[in-house]
Amino acid sequence: MHFTSVDYVRAGYLIKKKGNWTITPEGEEALKLGAERLRDEAWKRYKAWYRGKEKTTDEKPAAQPEEENDPAKETMIELETLEERAANGIREFLKSKNPYEFQDLVASLLKAMGYYIQSVAPRGKDGGIDIVAYTDPLGAKTPRIKVQVKHKPDTATGAADVRALLGILKAGDIALFVTSGTYSTDAKHAASSGDKFIRLIDGDEFIEMWQEYYDKMSDEDKNMLPLKRISFLGNNE
Image (cartoon, rainbow, N blue to C red; front, side, top):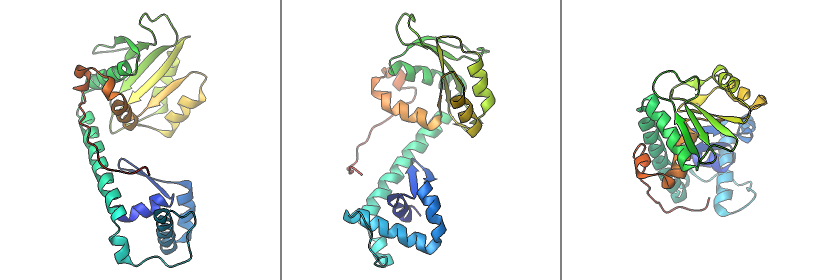
């Protein structure tokens, strides 16, 4: 399945990112071709990409043995598999953290991004705000960043939580909502349809941001979610 999926990715029918597969609008339209024609068209488009051509030809797809012995595909699948394993390992590590540890991870990420942490909520009730950050050391400049953190890796945060955060913002505030899970469609709509700014960050994006700013963190902060960088020979595709 992984091997064959390369055709659909290169055809523009499928997007694969760290274990998540998403069909594109072009892919949804291509489903109307039926299974066999869809497979053949994806294979033709892959071969056109491989040969550096812009258009496919009308020739029949190559025989199955040629498909199975394609070294370019083998390399893609090997790298893709390693990337998925790495991403899953980070997700499981993050999942093992308790809510307060995840909250501290978010604060460390903000520090690495250049923000100044004014406060991190202690254990117990926090009034809906877990972290307050500023753009300058004194906190004299706006906007103030009010952050709510939810550590629910297996749950989709709903619109009610987003609206509750928006409801406690004051003049000069912007909101950041970080979850280790995902957001429902209604939650995303609530965040984008109001007159106050709120940025939603889900678990996958948090991991990507942690990787991006990792080198700017202190050793103490790095050890909260330690990473090991490994380089592989790749290409520019």
